[in-house]
Length: 178
Image (tube, rainbow, N blue to C red; front, side, top):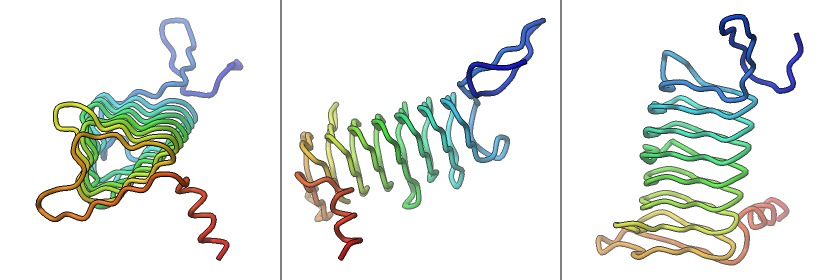
């Protein structure tokens, strides 16, 4: 039997089915770290110290806690990410989340969320923070064209840095050449 796509094989009735979407309830000790050729869908949460590496999109319908996610496509997190100072998101597409807290985020496309706290966010096109709270507080945001939010910074004296104009990837290459 040959398949037209990479993926995992299931046998249902008398039919062999190959899917390029890996679906799991949670990423924790029951699954371990996930490395997959296609798309990954997590119906629950991604627990601390675990990782997902997918060549396609990653969708998490719960929260991400102190974990690492890399995607060849986009990353969508329904309830947000608390990176706990060690979590990271990196993708060749866009990052969409309810909130991003204490994490490193690097997206070739845009980053869209409801709030960003104490995080380092690098976007290839724009950072769009909207919704009821819509604030960026603490950390660093870097973008090539636009950072949009209602509130930037904090009355509590938390350092918040935003940079617009030169791509962070070009800046990084420049520093490596010095």
